[in-house]
Amino acid sequence: MTEVDGIGGIGDVLHHALLLALIGATTWLAVGVLHVVEDAAFLRLRVDVADNRRTRRARTQIDVLRRLVSALLIALALGAMFMTFTPLRALGASLLASAGVAGAIAGLAAQTTLRNVVAGLQLALTNQLRLGDAVVVEQEWGRVEELTLTHVAVRLWDERRLMLPTGYFISTPFENWTRDESRVLGTVLLHVDYRAPVAQLRAEARRIVERSSLWDRRDWAFQVVDSTQTTMVVRVLASAADGPTSWELRCEIREELIAFMSVEHPEALPRRLDGLVQPVEGSDTATAPRATAQGRDDGISAASRSP
Image 1 (cartoon, rainbow, N blue to C red):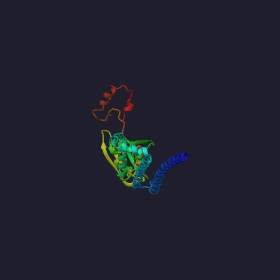
Image 2: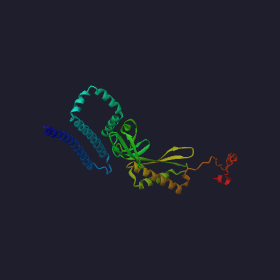
Image 3: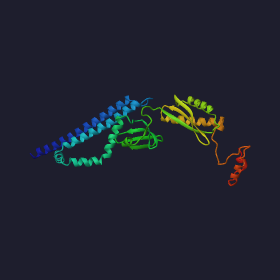
Image 4: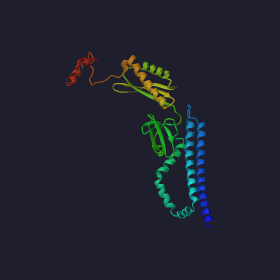
């Protein structure tokens, strides 16, 4: 009888161990199936296309839902494992009386985490933020590389990663350059002299924009938008397919316009002011600058002050 009891005890232990292994294996298989389904869906939802806004939205929602279902399956598996232990079932009945207090303490402890989880679901399901979106956060430009239930990873333009909790995007304003479409209007501001030939600059700006392969052939403009005491401010607007392309287009326009003015119209470049008023021939104030300059012992010769 002793050996039979021993065999029976070992059999119960093995049966319990096999039951725990079965629960764990079933959960692992279910989570693996979720990963396979997600990978299969991502193969059909390609993001290496020109207009991938809807695709990125679907990929974001699938990824967040897969993480949520996986977490629920793991939680259910752990609960099922604990329920196989008779002492834990009896202990659970005795803990019901203090469940309210424990729940309140756990809620306070996990308040930030729960808020981020809810924020992550809100971001994914309401289309406020998607994987691959171009955003400006904390005065930094980058693209959303990872979006989970608790945090968002933004890959900045210089390959740094900015990690932010999902709750940040719910409570803090941020720029999403690809919310509805990725097209961006780029702005180039230049200070030029009042003698600058605006018509020639406009024609050259149009030639530069139309010749560039970065322009999306939709919008462009050349305007005098402001004036100061010494210069006038001209603005060139040009549309591009997305933020990075717009940046390259702006640099190209700025470089070529400055080069054009340096060669063809050097008088259009803003003049450096050193605080000395240049004398005008035939005017009564021609001697005023000399009186002002006498008080300065800066070694500037008369020849260097002549226009």
